[in-house]
Image (tube, rainbow, N blue to C red):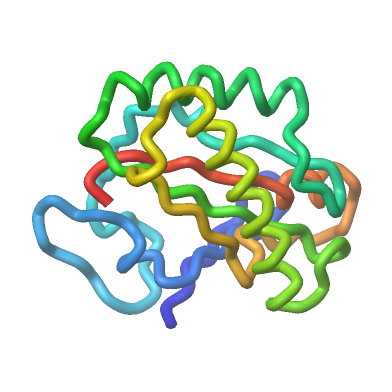
Length: 159
């Protein structure tokens, strides 16, 4: 498994299998640790609306999360050929082991999937998975850093 590690805002971002995880229209992919993208991937969902957050140990959608998902659904309903991938994450305090992280991330991704389906996005287009590793490794387990870890990311495209 390959791992991308970068620093952002006092936190370390880690993304396993980065090169294999991004669709690349050129067919060219680089192996090994590489801080540049193997290709450029464009999502129809703006970056500021690509993730929703959760309270600790919860898979319940907040009012703010629903507002973001309403904007995502408005875009996705109009793009009926695009596949949607939801990846849910947990912080390292609420779910300490990989199995716990994956289960809580899966519950969060399922909540997002169910909400998008209720807003008209076809269920056959959506895959929802939980990650067994955090995408963010904070230098300090502050409430703000832990909150950044409790998310579901939405990607759309030719996945």
